[in-house]
Figure 1 (cartoon, rainbow, N blue to C red):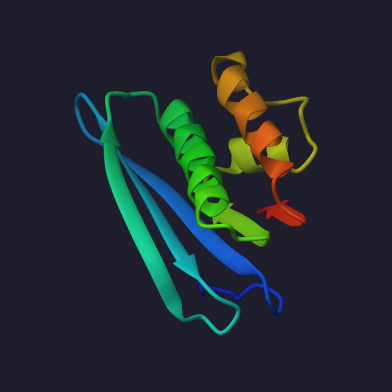
Figure 2: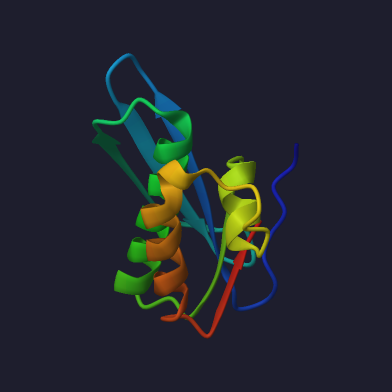
Length: 117
């Protein structure tokens, strides 16, 4: 799999979560449209469910983008269920991430452009 850059003047946030026995590490990496590394963050949360961890990472990435005043963002990662739901396919997302899903949708209103995938 090869990283693909966002359109001109759009920031891409790659998000991921890694699980251990009793917690998850969340990772957010930010690059510009030229692929230049802008910043990266990690944090640990007490979650062991992979879907909740991935959804938490998406929300955290959106919070970071909002706090950093990015206007145009793409959130990308391997959390297909979460990203598909946020892209419009709400028929298959699990109820256990409903609050995180709604938080993410609310955060999208702070951007002039926000895409998932």
